[in-house]
Amino acid sequence: MRKFKLHNGKQGAALTIRVTPRSRKTEFGGLMENGTLRVRVAAPPVEGKANAALVKFLSKVLRVRKNRIEIVAGQHGLDKIISILDLSAEDAERRIQGWLEDS
Image (cartoon, rainbow, N blue to C red; front, side, top):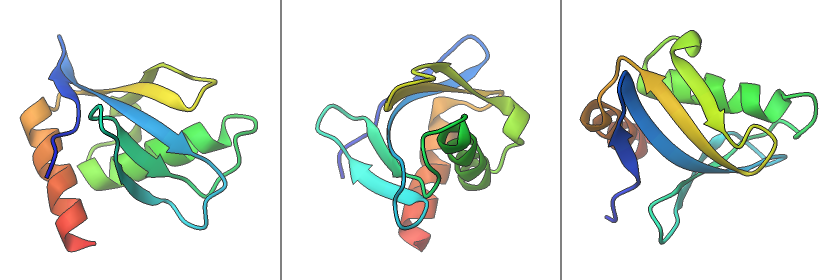
């Protein structure tokens, strides 16, 4: 399997995500060629609902509190950079891979 883009930041992991709002359900949608992780969210892209759904989903997958996840770039676009505080890139990747295998 191709690797997704995860980086260690000063305080945790950072990953790139492409969001597809108004999907049938919230789930991982695959991996793009450049390593960006695709996430489908059921919420519409209005009033921050899609962003909130993304953070809630990542919180569940990564097993971290929602306040440890921050959208640092792409707040109003489909492509986002997400910061996960106090979680290494290796741990984040392991948890995402585990989620994908269990799904």
